[in-house]
Amino acid sequence: MGTILTLIVVFGRIGLGAFGGGLAMIPFFHHELVILNGWLTEAEFGEVISLAQMTPGPIAINAATFVGYRVAGIAGSVAATAAVVGAPLLVLASILWLFSRTRGKTKAVVDHVQTALRPAVAGLLLVALWTLARPLLGDPGLWILLAGCVLLSRIRILAAYPQLLILAAALAGLLFLRP
Image 1 (cartoon, helix red, strand yellow):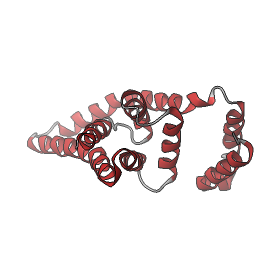
Image 2 (tube, one colour):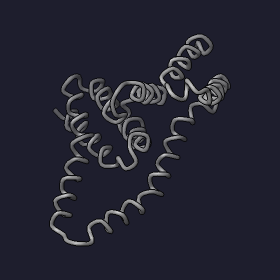
Image 3 (cartoon, one colour):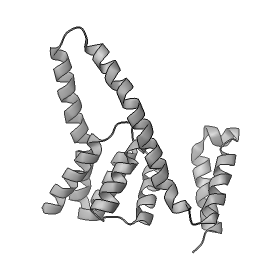
Image 4 (spheres, helix red, strand yellow):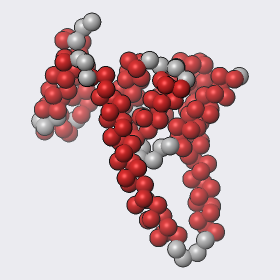
């Protein structure tokens, strides 16, 4: 039962740091899953994030479900998913309850909070970019694939249907980046 409780605490913390959405949460995921708990290696982390982005649904829920299952089976999957959703939901419900008790300046307070969070979210997105790009540094093949994806993303059909670009990148990886 200790593992389940650890999953709840870890994914609850990740969920509470969810300002800016799924991509902004990547640094939290990396810190908790790779550095602090050692549940994933650097390579596995990249794979989990890639799979979480490719599958339908929010990145945080997909990643929590996968890692929870890997760490503690179905019970871990349910616990991690519930924690990553439940923790921020409880905070949001508490804030809404608090705002419902105030009068007049609620909108101004919310606007100020949102404005103050923008630089933090931008910083988290930059850290997420660095976290995902760091494994590319030593592999020229991945840089070529990245450049190709950026160029191909300018094609209208691929811009409209990014799933095609993801499929093309996966096929290119299978064909050209074999170990």
